[in-house]
Image 1 (cartoon, one colour):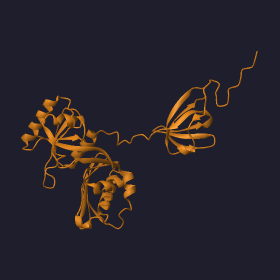
Image 2 (tube, helix red, strand yellow):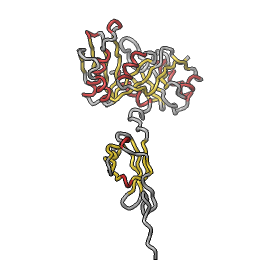
Image 3 (cartoon, one colour):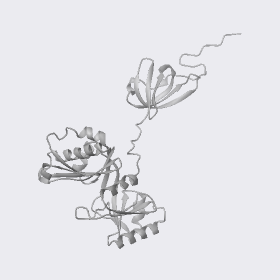
Image 4 (cartoon, helix red, strand yellow):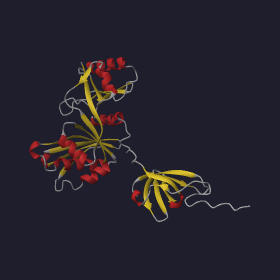
Length: 309
């Protein structure tokens, strides 16, 4: 009886070919998916970041499950894959905007299906759009006519113009346009998010020699530089830090004051456990957008405010 033939090079006794991959030392630090053989001959997949590549093995750090060392001879297939979306990118627009209520020490909120009616006292002498509009980031879930009627009733009773905050370009905005709502016309705003630790690493040393004072309370702090010519406020909402009202006197701009104030607020937030920073910036404010984006803030969504005709 003839002897059984040996498997070809790169082929196992089960007929599974190995070595069909595009991996190598160049994938260290990148996210990869690797199919490899187990001792019993079955194949399984591992997804994670390649942290090491050696002569006989590679190491993949699985997200939340620790490292796996894989013999190169057992690799069946493998390739780099796109980075996983950050936690912040996976948060919905509504979830982001719900944190805004923390800006006001006293405010009234009332659920309206999937919407949220909001009323807040004047801030620095005026009513703020964010605190005095219905948050409408998805379909209301109770019928459009009923939702619009309740928005009108709620704000009319407060002697306010009925307002709705929507995501720019959304189906909600398009539907409300047909129900008598038009843009306020005073500027759309980006909601920008950043990792607090990463933003801090970028900000440290960016405005050296600028002293910043800090007035702290339990859940908020106000930073001021150059005798108050640059100020800003940070407010905590869980492990989120809301950056609000960062302004610099026009006569004192381009001196790194805004950078120093922002760094102080993020440092304060980090000391209180904040992991995510959020702010709103007008889409037309190119200078402010450049500052924030330079230090890691990324636009999550864009807001538009509509008023009832």
